[in-house]
Image (cartoon, rainbow, N blue to C red):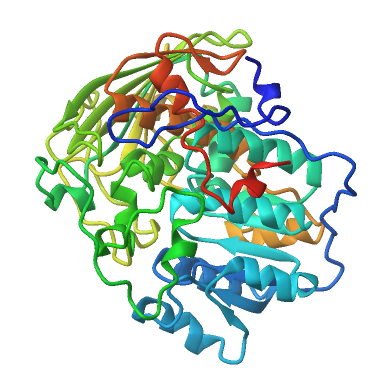
Length: 479
């Protein structure tokens, strides 16, 4: 089935069970709405963009502060399913008098005509419906990484970007910083060429590392906090009862709600290589190591091999992903020290703590080896002798003209193009969605890049789409 049919066919009902961990999961294949006047994103002619913040605690708090600090936006609405909880108070107190909502649907019903753009920093599983609703209303969208929870959701958002003509940006901040402009300049100058392998690693402690890997079921029901709208938190997902181990970032631990370490950090480590090496989608995803694999939450450690074919005269590339405290990849000779870039922002509200090998990547070409960290950190040529040989041959790299938030807001004003629109960040996010399917199933996957189907595993292929949205949420899966 061609990917183009995803938005043009009805939901297929009564299909196979996805896996022991998932719900009976019909393929989520949706049809395009017809004969409707399509809203288009209006270029903002004012000197400030009217922005609604959706998700204002934890990472959302950092995004809200970062966007406001540009001086390019007016904050016109605040929305959070747990509005009034401790983690939302900083932003509520900062913007007193701004209308507040727990349900973003009610916010749009009441205030859509006052909103130019939205910033979305909610759990991974809820990105899609909010983003699609905003785009249908002609609102520009900044959404945290990963773009969406499933491969199909990313596909639909890319189609919606084209259809509704809005400015889009995924929140991988480094894609507007030094690494972006350096990688682009070095690729165009032929410094980065003939890349054959990339290693990316995030070996710091994750939330689920404290859990017992023998957990055999989802957690028991607990009382819903008085401040919280649990039904809106669930969104289109299967309606499980509330438990604190789903909330405040804990959602990242569970396959049904989050994208694990790969979805969290992959976009900060692989974004520039993916774009400028034109990797697209892999043809094979192989889970080489899954420590304490289970059907509920992410492995304690993972090694995933993504195989990308030859492209436009460039050689095939193997990208190997490592996470887990005990799963440290070998580094090349002359690697030097493993340091944390001080410019890397907060992670779960705290500076990232050093580990045996800090978050980063190594890029291997036929002639040179490059060492990089995360986010906007620039690359080094290693070993130092090779760097010295190349010192006089490196092109001048322009300074980043804006940060990621400024880039988005200026794009809303028609003054520049966004650096991480869905056309760029969508395929990158789909790579991570395929990696998560390999983690969840524990099986090697063969992927057809033309039809966008997993060809050797029916259950895994179903996971490209995931469960049928629950009643009341299907409308967001229509273009």
